[in-house]
Amino acid sequence: MIMNVFVIGIGLIGGSLAKDIKSAFDNVTVYGVESNEANLAEALTLGIIDKKAIYQDLQLADMVIVSIPVDVMVTELPAILDAVNEDCVVFDVGSTKSQICKVLENHPKRRNFLACHPIAGTEFSGPSAAINNLFKDKTNIICEVELTAFKLQERALKVFQAVGMRIRYMNPVAHDKHIAYVSHLSHISAFMLGKTVIEKEKNERDIFDMAGSGFESTVRLAKSSPAMWTPIFKQNKENVVETLEEYIQNLTAFKEMLLNDDYEGIYNEMNNTNKIKGILNRNTVKQEIE
Image 1 (cartoon, helix red, strand yellow):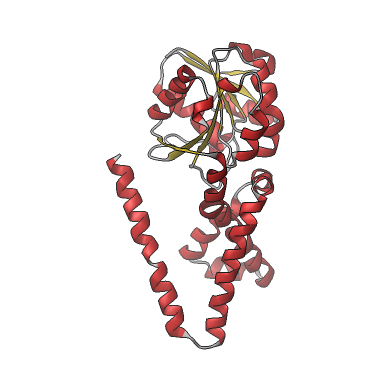
Image 2 (cartoon, helix red, strand yellow; image 1 turned 120 degrees about the vertical axis):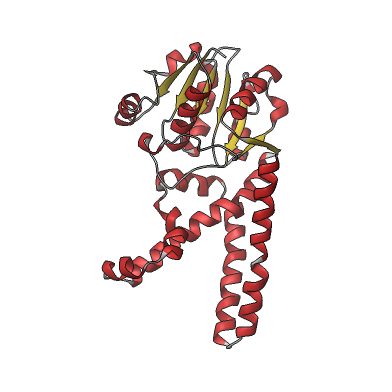
């Protein structure tokens, strides 16, 4: 494949995709488009991109990867589609899908757009966070695939396969509902756990001296970028509120069992929840087989 690949937003996801695409294909030139000039310069220095670019250059693109905050996506994606040629595939990597798909449903070049969400990442951000093989054996959710031109689907799928992604198809509404439970709620829990500890433990040495691997792994997501996650919570507000209500109910029930010295109930709750190990293990085995 000889391609001009444009990456708009060169952080963890966009940068990691750029690195893997360059590794997987010969004769690929990666162009970087960034509102942050420091990030653009860093991406060029690190070899993540080959050249700097602007929107006016998008007519040269065979593929455009849009990796910017989801609130910016809803305003920028129509302009990006306006700028590309008829044979270019544009896909996003946003963690919400309904509003993005809605804003593009009547765009003249809707056939050029593929709505995606690679479920991969770390708590770090910026070009220096980009790593090789981030997407190996990770799931990429694709929404409304039937609205994308088939030959452009094929081009994107070849790239997804080359970087090691597994593909699952889902409608945008279902995606946003399910991702609120398995991703968005996890981030809120991490942020609020971190907040609770910081407010209670005024002496930071106590936190660092007593924090074990359990606390570190649980609060890891609180290091994620607020600039990225606040728009996600805003766009998926209805689903996030629903998951929070259910989570709060479970926390309240756990507190009541403690207050009532119901340790058998606590044991049963934890024992029943241990089933999640089997679910996660089955999913891991399934991924390895696939």
